[in-house]
Image (cartoon, rainbow, N blue to C red; front, side):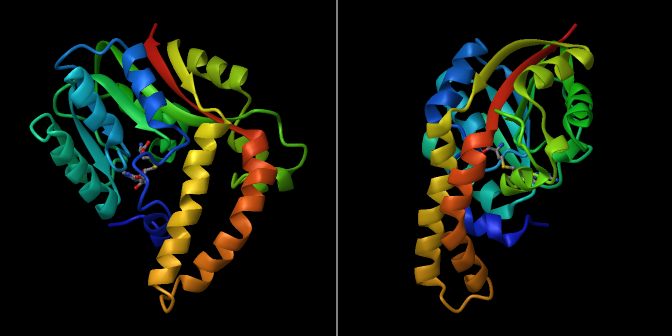
Length: 248
Ligand code: SAH
């Protein structure tokens, strides 16, 4: 079981697979006022940076599940490096439909809401693992400004304009689902640059090492087009944030 190989190539050096600088992850952890031994579930945990750094900084415990064997391995290595292997566990697997055996204090899906078929489905899935009064974390894009055409939306790597909404609408959606929005930390353009531009150097170094690989042409084409595509579309139109929710 794996994700498309292009992500394993372009994001192999990312610790955070989202437009979030490490400082933002730390800000979020502090904002949530995490107490020692807070139990966290993270669906689509990537390379485990959230769980590992929160275990180090706030003594949380938790489990991450991710479909990528590479990212899962990197998450375990990060836990070792930060000395938190006794507090966090990373499972390689499909998080769709995953419900924790023990109810958790914080149930998260950061930038992977397709796991539950969208925001409402992912909130519903996470709520099955959550104790009463616990916090759900959703990391999700939103439009900074509505793309004027479907072509612009596709330029942002969205399927359609209707894939995302404006920030006030996203916040209203959470309320409609029966949740109070109790915190949020939003990405800025620098955060986006760290996520997107970091892929370019990774792709270039990978190309130097793997010129004969079957994906080399594809990666070369992406490296050529991505900087201008990103600057024209994503950087101008797409926002991203992590939203903390508590059931009303
Ligand atoms: N939350 C992490 C990773 C976000 S990227 C972070 O912020 O760094 C999205 C992640 O979802 C990737 O690591 C990808 O491997 C994972 N993923 C995609 N589909 C999945 C699925 N069905 N089950 C579990 N993980 C999945």
